[in-house]
Length: 88
Image (cartoon, rainbow, N blue to C red; front, side):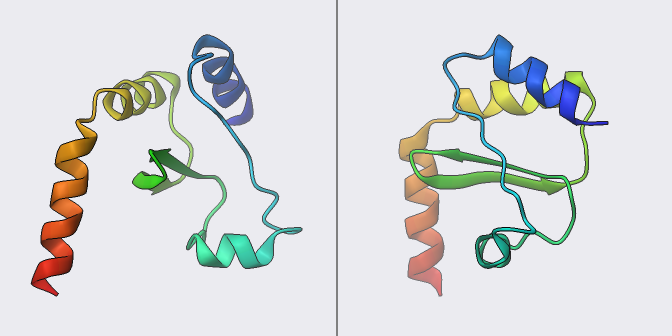
């Protein structure tokens, strides 16, 4: 059900790398990523996980996620991560 929405978004956003994980074949990767539900939508930017949510999204919500991830100030994200690590 989510497949056509995902595929359309990947065609519309050629500047974003889209990928899928076969959780049956890649059980170790799925476990490391904490995938407990299919689908699980994850977004990485500069190698940092910035969004993760189980379940399918309607097209407008997926578009909002993509726009938000593109608009992130990664210097702020890295600073927040460093701040959290310092507080541990």
